[in-house]
Image 1: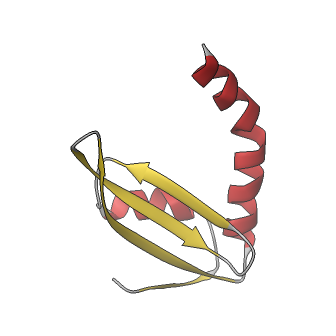
Image 2: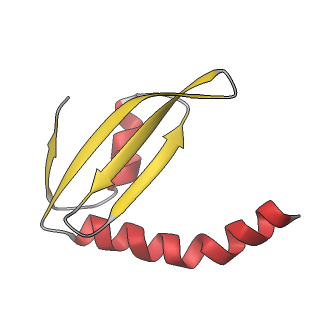
Length: 80
């Protein structure tokens, strides 16, 4: 299936990007409500001056922020 092939092909670049964002000295984070096929979701983003990681997830709970940030030691700013 094409989705599986794309997922496999992008796994390494995605992990590299996530590492770069988490390794930044400072980053911004934001979330907003999102709808996918009529279902409520949340769009989370982590932004540095050079990189962005976006995730569409089930909810706006803080666990989603923690999962996105991982073990970063960055100074994180947010509007929430």
